[in-house]
Image (tube, rainbow, N blue to C red; front, side):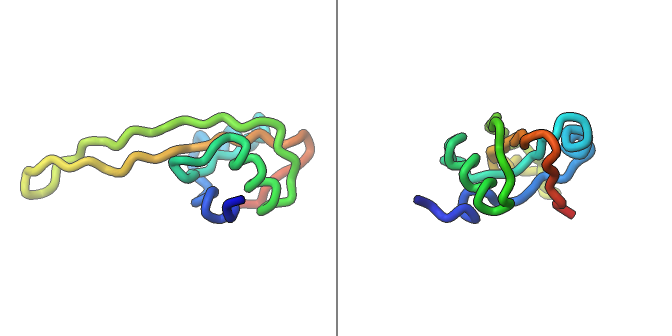
Length: 94
């Protein structure tokens, strides 16, 4: 089994993610591109010692950016996971 810290890269703390945490007890993480929902669930449970109810994942495509020299480049593609915790449990990410 892979190391949980290789699967969960970083929490994504944004306005939308904060609203999800307050309203629906859901937290957003950036995860490894080849991680499965089951691996993400086990990793969050091992790192934070919380009960995970569900995991939703989405692949975020890289965006086209223009450099100051006028060339087009692409940012890295990412994978995000929205993790729903059991009612009454919270994470302190900050």
